[in-house]
Length: 143
Image 1: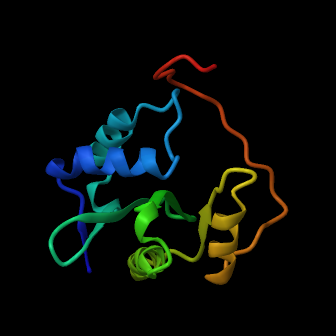
Image 2: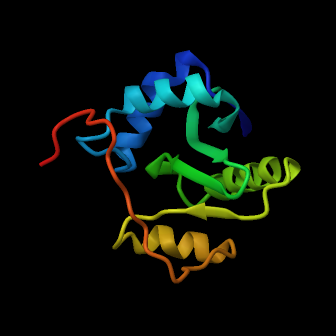
């Protein structure tokens, strides 16, 4: 396995992976999300590939000077359970720690108990906070 930075030629495979992992929503255009990440913080977009170069997983992460965040972490559903997500998270944690990031926040969709259990095994826990959002740009119409 090899972790490296996202390259443009990974785009189709990343979007396909996100869809197979149920990470996309109709109101979030994955191409725009990739464009925005690459334009703003290309060093925070990792892919995991196997020994023959097949994309197995990916994740976006960032650091705002106060907290780190992780988004779009996904692993090929047919290859889950092999430690791939754990490997990506370890790399992200190391990279964030190396720039002085004291804490990582992440969001998991309500009801995604398998993913919550995964992060709990890594030492993450739920906190007494409310996550709020405000859409500034509508990429597509919401249902």
